[in-house]
Image (tube, rainbow, N blue to C red):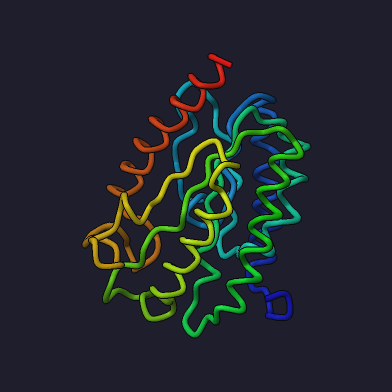
Length: 212
C-alpha cells in the first residue's frame, strides 16, 4: 500500500504535533493507545488508573503505522499499550495476498512492543455496519479474515486480546444496528461500551502485573 497517494499525510503531521504536546502531560508510565481513527476518536483521558496518550491517526493502515510504533514507545515510555489497527486494510476487493502483507506488518508491530518490554492489549477491528455511508468501501470477508490473523498473531504474545467482533457484532458477521455512525466509525454509545471493555481489561492486566 506504500505506492498509493496519501491524502492523510498533513493530518498525520498535525497528529504528531498534538501527540507530542500531550506526551508531557501524560508523562512516562501511562497508557499508549495507538491505531487509526477509531483510536483518535476515543475521548477519555484515563483508563483504570492510567493516563492515556491517544496516538490515533485517522486513515492510517497497518504498514504505515508500523514505523511509528517504536518512535512512540521510545518517546512516551508507557507502562502499558493498547493497539487497534486494521480497519483501513480491509477495503473492498482486498486480496488474501494483501492481507498476508498486512499480517506481516502487524506481527512486526507486536514485536516492537515485545522489544520495548511494554505489555500490549490487542483489539481486533470492529465489524462493519450494513447499509450506511461507508459500508460499500469495506469488505466484511476481508475484515473477518484479518480478525482471525490478528488473533492468531497476538495469541500468547499480547497481555490480552479484545475481540470487537464479539463485543459489537450481530452474530452474522456485521455490526449491530447503531454501533457506528457511518458503517465504520463508532457511535457515542459504542465508544462508551469500548471504554467499559478497556476499563475492565486494563484493570485485569494491571492486577496480573502487580501479582508478578
